[in-house]
Image (cartoon, rainbow, N blue to C red; front, top):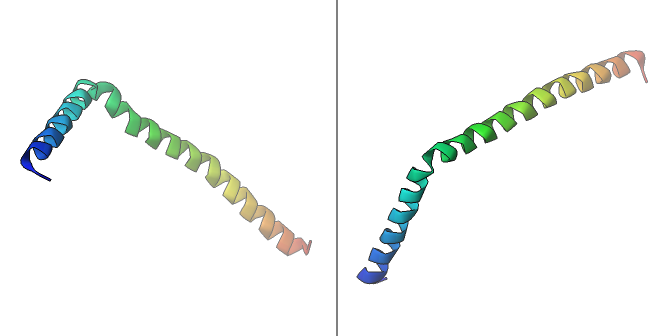
Length: 64
């Protein structure tokens, strides 16, 4: 890679960073949305897992 290619690469990286900085408000929302979805999945999965464990215990105790 020669210098002109590197300069072009850094120039395009700079523009990408400038665009992301301009979109900073919406850009910051995405990780929070993904984290919120993760919490939602966790809150849905934990009661399901607890219910499954409870049913397994009941099945083991009753011998079914």
